[in-house]
Image (cartoon, rainbow over all chains, first blue to last red):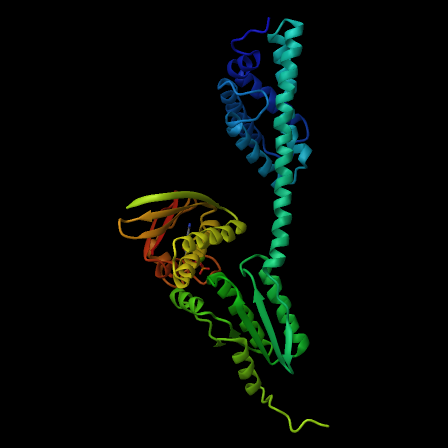
Length: 285
Length: 134
Ligand SMILES: Nc1ncnc2c1ncn2[C@@H]1O[C@H](COP(=O)(O)OP(=O)(O)OP(=O)(O)O)[C@@H](O)[C@H]1O
Ligand SMILES: [Mg+2]
């Protein structure tokens, strides 16, 4: 009896689209989507239905796999992103898809009089919607993993050991990108170390910083002037030739003494603090 | 000018800026740019990517390998649909910033690139094109 032509599901999504949309939106508003604006729910639901209809019409398989489902998944990705950002749990996000079942099945029951065929249709539709619902959960996990991976990467990206080279002389080799949000905190910690050590001179070595752009420069400038206020002078070392050129082209004025290498910077720091390292007298026997 | 390769990379978040720098670096290396030229284009890209994210509300960047019959080059097209820039000449001037930046990003990126163009309409968005040749 199952007719090889248009499926009842497509008939409904195609022919009764606005009615389906209305009951679906009403259903969502009535259950736990309280934090979201109706207009937003309506907009997302309508876009989902539009792409869902196109996928069904192009004869896409009921397994939610393959290119015909791509656009539907894009809508779900967007839904997942906005809901995750608004603090929804993964199951609340998946409910977006699951909640269409109630109104949809009600309409299927009205449209398919034959019991066996109805059971078949409902089964197929359930499997399909479950897959799409699970897809939002997978996305959620991916986003979480991405965030965690990013956090780990960031720790690697920005490691800043503070080394006391000599009395009153600190070295801060900076390794990694300097434009993440954490940079501010890291720089503040560095300043704290300067205070704790009562340092007179801090050598900031940027050999390990791959790109110096305006934001990186701004962080450096802020750190240098804050250090100055706390009585410590900074020397920048490790400015490689290519970085020196880009700094000039950007028009950055670092307004600080710089030396090519950490060793040169250290020699200058010793001189400034009136210390020197030389061979001591004859070794004691 | 022939576009030999055209790739699209999102430019919406701070992570994307890091990624854009990586992608630009990899392509300049593949094209055989000198270390100085690599660094110049990566730095310029970093500035414009950050503007796209921070001022333009996010957008995309196209990474295009181009050939003018003699040389290969890399062209970067940054596009956003943000608020746009009312006075481009003013935005391009050194030390002008509507935010808390140094105001050197746009003018610096221009100095760091061989080709530079900017197109922006208030309410419609901004497109910035950077180019460097081998
Ligand atoms: N994509 C954009 N969309 C809208 N406005 C922009 C865009 N790019 C730049 N602007 C405007 O131009 C101004 C100058 O940009 P520029 O990059 O030179 O400085 P900045 O971003 O403020 O500071 P920084 O020196 O850290 O880059 C910005 O403050 C902003 O008002
Ligand atoms: Mg900028």
